Image (tube, rainbow, N blue to C red; front, side, top):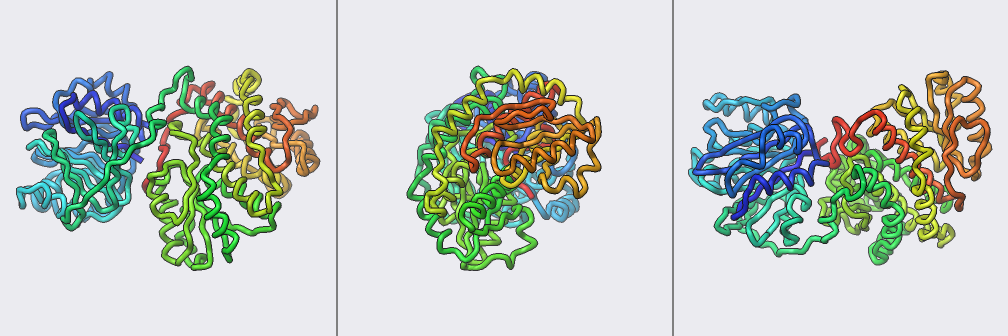
Length: 587
């Protein structure tokens, strides 16, 4: 949810930290701040806004020192203001911290520390880490012992980085992402390799319940929460992570939408060995579940239709945050497919833990091959779609679908036969002309309510389209199953309403067109997504014709574009929607 970063070496810490925070801004962008150490003193600058805004106003990059920490925030505890922005200092000012995650028992710890004379300025749970560290350091005069005592008191899931005015940097990981960068001119600790990949591709991935201590003289020590030394191998991170610039595109979101003809091909070439292992598990499973959050859950709904319609295989999609209410669903004869772009979403990881505790075999489809979800999975397949910086998922969604199509095809004796080259070319055809969609967005920007209607396998795409509109445009949008129109939603249709009809010329076409006439009779405005025009549409967005099962991969593209261009018309930032973050690592 937040991004944390630390650096120690012989470089200018502030400049490196600001660059790293800009690359990780997708993780949170309510406020930003950095702290550096000079002459045994910690200096902090922070403010509300995006990295570039706060850097311009507060001159973050001009802080002096070769050691420091930085943070971008996605607010959980406390409103968005300068006081609640990170870093947070301890009462004495000798320690400063940045934190990602949630401290469940912070209220108890805060009261105990206040009773001992430590004071607090912010409303955050994070500040308790700074004062708890200070308390333990005052007692032990030893940074390693202070870190061990501190993590033993904390409850929740977190990662944090601390700087001590004596010139040491320490970090701890507990169920939240953290990676170490080993450079020629210093060390980094970060939520994401994007924070430092411009400077080094040598990384160390600490395990859960580990602490690292480092300094500018080359010290780099790892130990577990009990104080036992830990050894790690340095690994190389893929250079593709360094290519996170927008290039000729105005926004990452548009860049990532436009990359889908290529990413669909890469997903279609997913690791066959891992796929075969997953397919074998599914063939032998008594029950199959698939879970995800947000866009990933919509992909799970598509999988349900594919498996059921073409293979007569029943699978149960479950929203990840709901799994904890049904722990007895799972047993040792079941398989769970977990879908996630980041592999760090807290709700997905909790769902996996619950199922795993019941003996269920865990498989995953994920974009980050070093993520927590991959480590928790028996078998995992990579989306291989490269970094997705825009908060609203686009290319990761179609890549998830591509892999699900491959799995479904194997389970139905290759009767689906996905032609990813043809799908890629069809995507390119849609993406070759944005002009008509831009014109529709100028009208859609004035809508207060948008309904997206689809039948059968098109309903999950309707839900995904509504999600994109909500995320990017802040317009109320709702996905509707076509057959349910007469059972309530028809009451909402009037001249102020826009309805997007997903209606390719397949087995759902006639019924969906009938629903369109019912909608038009109530004078709502209709935008048709189809390979076949009809006079009933106020606006028609054409998609190429393709074999029936694969329309979802095409029809979502113009809907992503429509959401993007409507966001521009409404002057909202499509890369960083308000109140949202890319990787939701808190419950």
